[in-house]
Image (tube, rainbow, N blue to C red; front, side, top):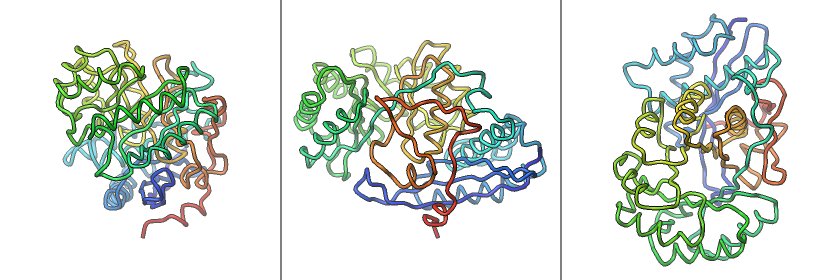
Amino acid sequence: MKVKRVQAFALAYPEPHYKGIERYLTLARVEADDGRVGWGECISQLPEASLATKTIIEQGFAPLLVGDDALDVERLWHKMLSRIWWYGPEGIAAFAVSAVDMALWDLKGKILGLPICQLLGGTLQDKVVAMGSIIFDMEDFNWTINEFRWMREQGYRVVKAGWGMRPEAVFGQNRQRDLEIVRQVREVIGSELELVVDTPGARGLWDVPTAIQRFRDLEPYRLKWIEQPLPPQDLEGHARLRAAVATPIGTGEDEWNIESYRRLIQSKGVDVIQMDPGRCHGITGCRDVIKLIEAENLHFSAHTWSSALNTAASVHLLAISTHGDCMDFKPHESPMQHELVADPWVQEDGYLAVRRSPGLGVQIVEDTIRKYLLA
């Protein structure tokens, strides 16, 4: 079975979970010579990145892959990495690799009639934990608290919020405000739900002494982990923080490939490693990182907050390991979760079922792609 066509589509859509702010992603479409199609996604996030990703896929990868064996996914993954050697395996190139790799796995599953988790070695989990994930509104506590109350009523077992609706008002800026909102959240969700908070660590809001203080301040609220407390490149700082506090540290969402994840793991500064198949070299890249995580007896979560394709890829990756903890999941309807596919993901009792249908297990609605196409 040969690759016949490789295409990319940059999309722009309003995100209800961010009060309608426009967000961006890029889809990859890989067609085999028998007409079957695989779809993939990357979380390219900004318009210029999405258009640049489309260029790499269609002008760089399409000539490389067309005519090759569609079933030989890992060899094609290595061909893409060899193509980008000069401008590097991170950034825009990593987005492009991620989207195409995901589409190739989807296509292979459809050709062979198997779900991706089975292609990756077997299903160890029949369902995975969906972590209801929202953005804090640090200026409207009532709205935020009501969101957590609603998620509890919907049956979520793990809930999370982070950052803020405006750059001027984010979690991590104001000690007393941070403590108060976490206190209120814990009060409304009760003791049985697990809670994660996410700080804009990439902005350098906390140094190590401040992070130690905040972790200890928040200990009474029994957080499952605190996400990205320090700038992601400060591996030594994360190690110092981890040695000084009891609450687990989650980080890794800014990493790109197996080499950067290896450095993170070796730093001894992380408990729960976040990765996004729409960013870190796709399903193939994530599978390789999972092996590193398992070898070090750490845990991972799928840091996915984009489309139903990325959700599907994350479900399959969590299903193949006993070290997967949970995955971010948008609790409300969203265009890329509920319009992009004919069969949206629905959590039940805080879980997503691992689908047994071929490939990713979702059906793309191509009219939706045309609706949200970035000009």
